[in-house]
Length: 112
Picture (tube, rainbow, N blue to C red):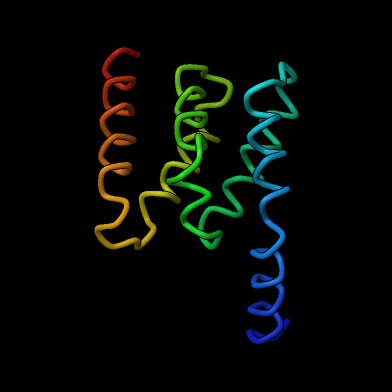
């Protein structure tokens, strides 16, 4: 696939990403099925590097993801997502949300 085609597909999905985002949040907050949650965390990981930052920092996504760290069966999936968020370049605009996410994660890490 050419870089231009990839860029066009990403722009197209960005404009329609709200439904995907809402579905992921719903599954992560309401489902009890381990495989469905793992698949959703994996899907979230795939999108985190290029979705609009508002979907990450202006929604309950980070808090929802942080709820999965204590569960050993989801820890690796969660850490992949957290690493992807940590690698993002977002300037100072979302610094407070980033610091809050990091602080909550460090507290959870100390407790486990």
